[in-house]
Length: 210
Image (cartoon, rainbow, N blue to C red):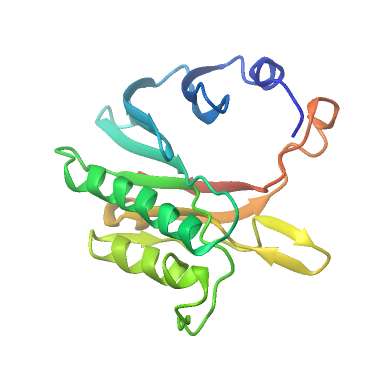
């Protein structure tokens, strides 16, 4: 928080940056890919903040491998019913984008999906804003597209003492899920980059064998 993107770029000089920024908010999403791999920006838009990057490379056996990485952040305002209806609309836009994709090989979705507190029962009253957009809705929409939300140990955002949210996720196609080594939330920047600012959400650290 309260840091310049250029400061982080200095820490990521061995990576190619692919970015998608919304000029109205001066916010967006970005992807850094190690320079030994080819990465191309396929598409981006600003509601939600959205970036699709295709990463290609050659594995140890000389075979070509591909990853379709989609990063998106659901925009939020005041937690009202209309706000959550708008969040759902943004998420549905992403789902429609996936439906229209010709190339879904090794598909990975990740980002801040801002569904709010998870009610484990999945039951919400119509007076609750999360009735209109919630974790269970996300899970079901992804399942219909053969995408699985991976279990990640820990929590992604601390609201206050002993109150945590798990609103940053990874969802993957079957081919990627089979190769998952591990995934967890971690404050990767808290020591190395403290001088330039610390993200308010924990990072997702995930390792896959594609």
